[in-house]
Structure formats: structure tokens, C-alpha cells
Length: 280
Length: 333
Ligand SMILES: Nc1ncnc2c1ncn2[C@@H]1O[C@H](COP(=O)(O)OP(=O)(O)OP(=O)(O)O)[C@@H](O)[C@H]1O
Ligand SMILES: [Mg+2]
Image (tube, rainbow over all chains, first blue to last red; front, side, top):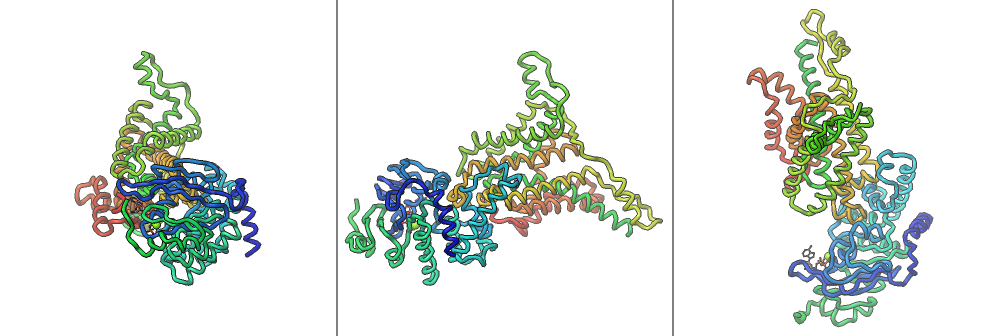
């Protein structure tokens, strides 16, 4: 197991070698505003994510957490603001390009390829790392085959790591919810991302599944060194896992700091207790 | 075996052969529909266009010669002796890939996230455009497709099967067209190839991923635009093969584009999203059609082939609207 992890780390560092040291800024969003027609989902939000940390994003339902992830990976284009990832500052990013640049994610409502097996789903996670072009794939010749085998091995290590060997060949549409969440994490990990965005990875899980998932997230962070942005409603989990927390409410940032700082922030307490707040 | 049974078998065999051709056309539809939710009305015209282009290259026609002659008062039509068939096939495929690329670049790109009906209308436009382009480039006359496939009845099979009937029976053996047999073999190779490609290559996996969930596909770094070029190229390839096989059978002419109409009942039967469905559906329609023609036809005065497939599909719709293997057609179309 540990040997596997070490091999993976060497692979991982190939991609993550961007000259940004642990603890320095990996991603920064500046003054992001996003609205859908009349609905303001995000209003002027700025925060950063440092390399190597677990950054939680919390807030009540409809606070704009998922929208924020969608802005970061390019599903939504904000009307205002910029996104700086690994020193590159931009207004608009495209999802398949952010994936290529090292941002992987999971979804609140699981978006797996339901008809495909666990193995194939996780293999798709490596698409950005596969270099041989279409022509080679079609001919299935030596170089392409070798590459496929290498990727296959990396995927098998992830499968070992997530303890899902027994469902390798199962079409994921048939798996129970908790396992689907795990496969989705596997697919994101397969990309060896520099930044991993997790949208409520433990929602709908029982206690044991939550504990497993927490352990995986911590392991990924500590052993792979992967930077993680984590949206989660379970406060216990958030306080345990995260290094820093950003709190959103009604599309605005109302808190930002260590778990302890945030826990004692009056605005945050009010938001969670449902204290009505003055309308703008 | 009695001649009656042997005749039945012969009818079924011929039906299977015809069915393979239907499957092939339906396959082109399914590829595009699965990956992009577009019902490609132009699939039949793509087959015609591909076949015209192939014959044009092969026989050394000058593209747009009518147009050139009309403008410059020249009288050109051929530029020499043509080229080897295999080169012509490769070039025709190149043209289909180019077409896929241009289509993505100038049409599909602007229609992302539009209603299916709008995409459908766009493909109707594409059908007319390609039909006109084919005429303009290669002329509207009927052309012969000769790519060197064997044709004519198989004597070997006729002799073999004659021996299956009792010696005193009035039976002359089964007729089977070697062109149909080679078409079936080629189609089988094509389908196997496509299946292997989609199952065991990274690009194939990307295709399946896009067919399954666009958003998730984007999130793992798949470029939808690139996939669409690939899918339309594949559909162009299938169209080329269908064009070659149908063209070899009945000449390259406008009616070739109507094979698309044969694909419709196949799709209803097999489901719009299922490749095995397209294949099985094609075979069922082929066999059903030939059986109906042989056994019901005489009772109703023939010409049953024109409508039987539709009736079968209609009856099928009543009981299984999603097709044999299909999913979710109600939601997607
Ligand atoms: N695609 C969209 N179209 C229209 N409105 C949207 C869209 N996506 C999000 N919204 C709106 O933006 C606001 C923020 O939604 P978002 O999903 O980001 O909240 P969230 O913090 O993730 O909530 P939850 O905890 O329930 O997942 C909501 O009012 C939501 O209705
Ligand atoms: Mg959400």
C-alpha cells in the first residue's frame, strides 16, 4: 500500500511541478460576481487556496457554494471578477481546459458515466494525461498500447487505495450511492490533479461511509500532497479535515479563516442559526 | 429437407443480407445520436455524397466541371485515367473527415445547447446542401460503383444446397448474391472494428463518456468539439462504407440517399441509442421484409417491401416505444 502511494507520488509530482511551494497561493478568485437572470448567485467574492491545504467552503443551502466551484472549473462564466490559477489570471476559463491544467472535481449530484464500469470511469479520469493521438489509438499499436497499460496500472493503484477492487467491472449505474461517490472521487484522483474540488463528497452517507471518505480525503491530501477545496455540510467533518474555511451566505462571503476563527464568528453563527439578515 | 423449408431458409438468408445494409445505415444515425443527441437527417445524403466522391476520384472526374465549363466556356470533365480504388477510398474518407471538421467549425459550434428540434432542422439543411454539393461537384448522372467486390450468384452455394433436397424434388438450389455476402462480411468487420475501438481505446472511452454525460465528460478534460469532429468523421466513414455497398448493388444516384428512410424503422425497432439495437433491428427488418414479400406478398399483390418495415416498426412502437435496447428516447427527441 505504502509502496503504491510512493509510486503515485512520483507520477503526481510530474504534473504538480509548477514552482509553487507548499503554503503559497495556488488559486485565487477576485471579486467574482455571478447571476442568472435576476438571481444573484455570487456577489463580489474573493478568497484564495494555498498549495497543500484543505480549504472548506461552507454555507447554508443556496449560499452559492456549488456555483463557486462551477466558476472555478469553468462551467459558469462570472459576470465580474477573475480567477488566477498557478499564476495565470483570467476572466473566463473553459471546463475541459481547466481539467487539462490540473483541476479535477466531483459533483454534488454524482456525474459518473453510468453505463461504464468502475474501471472505465476511473480510466476516463486520465484522459488529460494521455498523449498519443487519435491515430495511434485507432491502430492500437505499440506506443499506444504501452501507454494504455501504464495508465491502467495507475488506475489499479487508485482502485486499491479506495478499496473498491470488488466492483472494478461493475457498471457504476448499478452501484449503491456511497460507492458511486467513491468511484467519482477515484475518477478525479486519476487525473493526478493539482487542485481537487469536492462538492459534498459525504452527502447522503451513513456514519461509517463518512468516516471512510474522510480518511480517503485526508490521505489524498497528506500522502499525495493534493490541494483540496471541500464543500461539506457536516460541521464535524469540516472542523476535523480543513485547514481553512470560507463561509458563504446568500452569495456573499461572511467568514474566512481557520476552523476555530470561523466557529466563533458571529455572522457565521447567525447565518447557521437562521437569524434574518438585513436586505441590501 | 423439403424444398419448402429450403426456400424458407433462402428467404431468411437473403433477408439477413439486406438487413445488414439497413443496420449499417442505422449505425451512422446511432453514433451521432448517442454522442450529441442529434437526429442526423443527412445520414443518407452523406452516404450518397461519399459514394459520389469515391467514384469521382476513382474515375478521375474533375470536381465542379459543369460549373467550370459554364463559367469559362471550357469543356473539361476528366483529368486522365483516375486512380487506384484504394487511394480513392482513402481520399474520399479524407473528404468526409474534412466535412466533419467544417461542419463542427461552421455549424455545430453555434448550435450548442439548442433544442433537439433546431439541431434536427440544421441537419435537414445539411442534407439539402450536401445533395446540391454532390450534384455540383460530380454531376447528377447515374454512376456505376465498381470497387472490385465480387458479384453475381454463387454457384458453389447453389450446387451445395441443391444436394440438400431429395434427389427427385424439383429444386435448383439456393440463390445467394456474392455481393450481398461480401457486403455482410464488410459490415461485420466494420461493426467489430467500431466496437473494439470504442471499448479498448482512450478515444473510444472518451466517445462513450460523452454519450453518457456531457458535463462529467467536460470535467475530466474531454473537449466536446473535438469529440464531435471525431463522431461525425466516424459517421462519415460508416456513410462511405454504406455508400460503397449500396452503390455497388444499385448504382450511385440520388435514390441512394433514400436508404436513410429504411433506417428509420430500424431505429424505432432498435432504439436510437443502441448499437446492438441498430444491428439486430436491421436484421429483423431485413428478414421480416423478405419473409413478408415471399409469403404475404402474393396475397396482397406484392410491393410489400415499400411499407412493411414501417408497419412492423409502428406495431413495435405500440408495445415498446423505447425500442429493443434503447433508453430515454422520449426525453431526448
Ligand atoms: N444553472 C443555474 N441557473 C439558475 N440559477 C442557478 C443555477 N445554478 C445555481 N443557481 C442559483 O444560484 C444560487 C446558489 O446555488 P448553489 O447551487 O451554488 O448553492 P449551494 O450553496 O451549492 O447550495 P446547496 O447547499 O443546496 O448545494 C441558488 O439560488 C440557485 O438557485
Ligand atoms: Mg451545492
